Image (tube, rainbow, N blue to C red):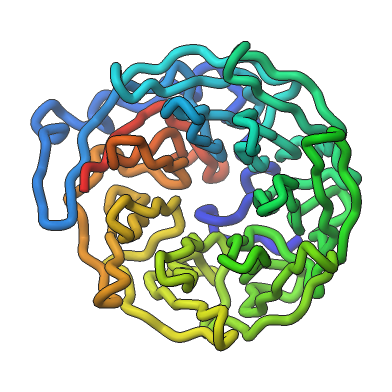
Length: 374
């Protein structure tokens, strides 16, 4: 497999970062000088919003997911070798223990189902297993396993309540396979195969119920290609290719029905962004971010889009097609998980920073968390 930059090379994470992350000292090896001071944590107001620190998680986590629950809390799952989970409570700004996973997971998929439970599947341990979280009992229970072990894939909730899983990386290589989870039966069934194998791609449910998959990476390199999944027929059809090849990009459905794809890498980090128009099956360039980002995106309550990582953030205005920088983030981490809170703020939690581990560079997971206020 081709080795890429640490910012997006999950293969590098698995081959060299796991030993460091698994050590008992990895979560606390940041020096005091690397932490923001009290002054640096102060509320900085800008036209595009500001960031403040909130309580840190009890466990450092990289390659995690953050899923909003029906009661407004945020369920955080994942971390290399990590089976614990946590819940962020917005009213108190604190974290409480979640149930324990049946298996450690990272680079997995997480989707809140129509009945309020959360499905978690796959992960970087090359597993096909899946399990369900019940907020009412704070417990995880196993459910049917996928047909293929995979990580760095996409998981999308369809209109009919099923979950579409597509692509990713497995023991047999980059995947073109796709499958559907039915919450009513707890079973997975294979569905149409992607036209192009891909991992670290983006997937978006469109207003008409189809799913757009775009970009990613495979043995041929970074991808511009895109395709559409039709749940009624269980088939994929080619869509127009993006203007720029990219993996690890964010994809956000806008209020006007178009899809904003931003950042990522190929292999250098990108600041460019583009829009997909389902009506014309076409892509067009839009304004570039003020800094390259992969990170995580959040659709704000006013219809703008926040993309942030590495200590900086940008907010996209669909009305003008331009980005405005936010105030500086409290923590300069990458690959954090983001979730919109009921009050309009955005929680960014966990992630990683790259450090030198003596003979190679590796990821150090972080427990830090902060809030973005528009």
